[in-house]
Image (tube, rainbow, N blue to C red; front, side, top):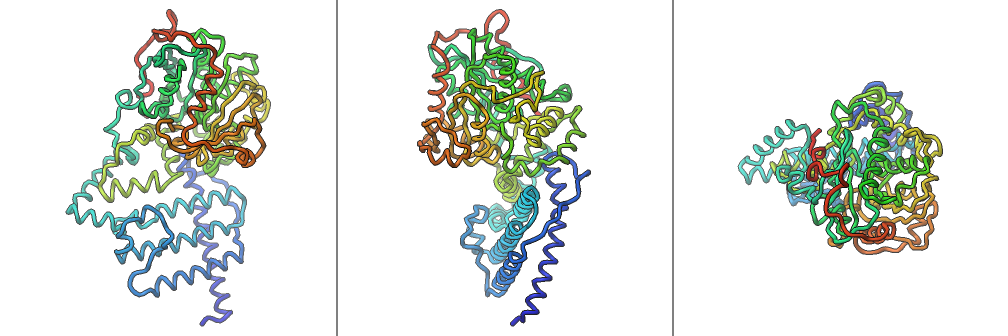
Length: 574
């Protein structure tokens, strides 16, 4: 039986140990976040001071001692946390194999303590978020499922295959080391233009930054106002044209929209000095003008997805400053305009990090696509990193063919000046929502002057553009608005064709947009299935009258088919 003095001394030692080890974790964490974001571990600012709530620390100490005593005193094999539904440990071996069961129970004990410590930290919000991120990364990496000797499923497969799974795992590892990233799908099953990005069309215009694709009509008549889609330049455009059954591009064409899409060039050294102004002026604004000329209408409609939406918002603000109403309506899918809430990506962004990136590439250079892809993967490490480490290397499995993951691995570089300017002016200083704070293409931006009708979509479980951030655009834009909230995440919520009859969406028909998202949700109604049909009806109401569909691409003599879609640019690799 411990005396009060023994207990106090034990608690004191526990607190000292926690304080010392936590400081070391913070020191390791700061360069880790920079490295995962493609940065350097050098030139880091002094670490912020942290303390712990004493009462919470005492509770954690007591709970840890009790858990450890229970773990070590169990006769036979301990039982892992029965409440855990983690699919990493769903196999029967985690319960029946004594060594694996003990390793899992010990891991779950440490997991509870580490997460409790992260919750007990008393520091600023940014540091707390980084600590939580670091703890999550450490826990994901140290799970017993990641180690062959502790993974009963991998060991059983090795026995069943007489070691063939281990040999295949080594071969998979060597293959991934050569290609420079972890395989998430069997890429040999896909080819751009053959079984992804197959909607029929042609390149009708190109410059050094992008190709403009026009798609063959699927209806006898099309709306007079053409539709221009601006995808994010940090990815390939064909996320919107994976397969015919889930292609947003094909769906728009089938609805009678004369559809054009920007296909970004994958930058190489020749584009390493390109700026944000270049991408807005020589790409988005250029594409708007070309589509308007090809379509022969006074106005067009436009759609921006993710960063493409932020770029479209910039272009529309430039046009508004010039008194140009070429764009009749705009759709924004999972788009950030107000960067107050940036979700888990905020863990990487601070003044020191932005200054570092400006020093490294603000005047020229490339942000490598594979570095950026790795950053996004580590936002969900169990699903997008360690899941494949276990499957590919420990079990010797070939990941299944999956079009979305093929696209996810098809990374894209960014020009350094473009990337550094984007980080500072949006993520760090949030200037897009400050009237007159930014000058782009010679014009001071004011989103309050963008008064055209807009359709805004946000995904409820989005970790890239949090739903609150997507909704925040309703408070910035002055025109008539329609906001829809969809279920699922950043990609699955958007790429949700009606035929699949999956996921719900929420709409509010009274035209009210209170400041807080939850107040909007309280007045919204849930609708089963995809939001695409609602968007198609809204877009049709802004697309003008219908006319006979064109029989040829482009508009002679200036704009004619250069090559079939999907074109050359989308096939360029990082």
